Figure (cartoon, rainbow, N blue to C red):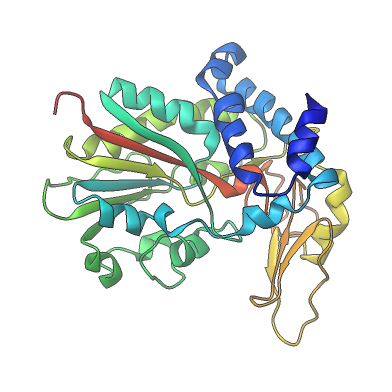
Length: 327
């Protein structure tokens, strides 16, 4: 099995689609969740599988990270989706990952929403929210935080109306008008930034809280809408044994961060096993699963990280729901 996998990974041609399919169909599934018995166990077991696969990629097929860093097709932007669907709406769950797809499908079934598509997209590079807004959202926006998007002319040009949810309990009244709603909730990103996010146990409460957020976002949309569910970036989980110690030297090059933009005339590092370099943007990004912390400006011990170049940070959900059953 591993020999066949190695042959597939080292063969010419794109390999990322097969990896994404493996994550969605074999790792982050409702069946594996049921077998795990709890969200935290599901997280730990799944990340162990991903860690093994990324170790193999780093050793035998590191060019996969160049595929991962390439922009998503124009068809996989929220702007394009809303342009194609006059009845459309989109919900961005900030920091949602492929792990949560089974939960989204479960909530869709309870809400009597048909599932039209289950696929994947990609974050910006680096996998930070502001870069996603400018590079991946599809509205030709500058680099902004989501709280700054309300009332932007670039959204109005596409007939989109923006709603921002700072907290899981926030609610908005969304009228069934010609405007296409674009909802952005800070959940679950805000939970991963919590000081309590130092172990897998937080994932149990996150899994449950997603139902509350769903009711305040997706369930508040007119039932006639075709709804896109996606996120700006995922998270890598770096619990015990899930970080690659071979990458430790590279975090020092990035001042303890997961990426760095080098100002002129500062010298840039060379491309290496643990670094991806974009010289035009003067950008260096940590590749793979490294738990960087001692040199960071804020020495957080959090085991949930993003901003680097790894499968679980960069690959994001792309789930499309049809109108409510019976409409």
